[in-house]
Amino acid sequence: MQLFYTPNPEFLSPEETNHAKNVLRLKEGACIKTFDGKGFFYDSEIVSFSKSDTKLTIISKNEQIKSGKFNLEIAICPTKNSDRIEWFVEKALEIGVNKISFIQTSRTERKNINLERIQKVAISAAKQSLKATLPEVADLLKFEKFIEKYFLNTIKYVAHLEDDNRKSFFEELQHIENQNILILIGPEGDFTSFEIELAKKHNFIPVSLGQNRLRTETAGIYAASIVSVF
View (cartoon, helix red, strand yellow):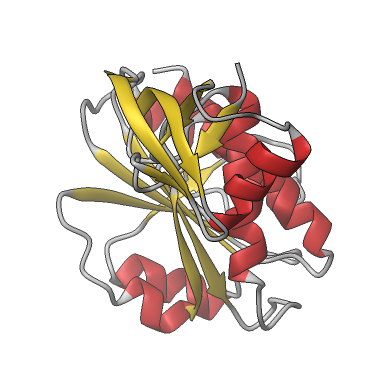
């Protein structure tokens, strides 16, 4: 059955309406499955089409059970090549990241992101992987402003390569349960010494993601994969 995204489960958006009516050529009375991005699937029947939307009748509502014991936010620098960061968003959603934030450091090559495009990538990935929940995606924010934000009941980490006085991110997670986790992922070239020290002053714990030097988007996926195993 075709899966459609709709924040309002009683209607399809113009874009989804066009796909249902003109691409799939569905008719009134057809049954479809939708998701609201907040963790619920709906079995619905098409009542009527209009130029702007599709009216639906909800037949049943089912919650997708959350897996894992952590809520994970990844704050990551956008890469120069936008395809690579879109790949990260797609794979992070499949793994189960709860929030993706974009940060701009002194070494970040890209100074802006296409947030609308990234959100469309997330929706497409959710459909493909049958996820009922969409991660929150936050727009680009300067590093200094981001780390000054107040994160309620959150254990904060900064992954970097600068020194050996870092804990293993994997080992860190073995000693905590049912927490909100935030990890900072730097740009190609890593965070500067100043940025690392600033993060530490704001109670971010320095961690290692292993011995290999990873691309920015690979480091983000690696961190998400570590969290997903718990």
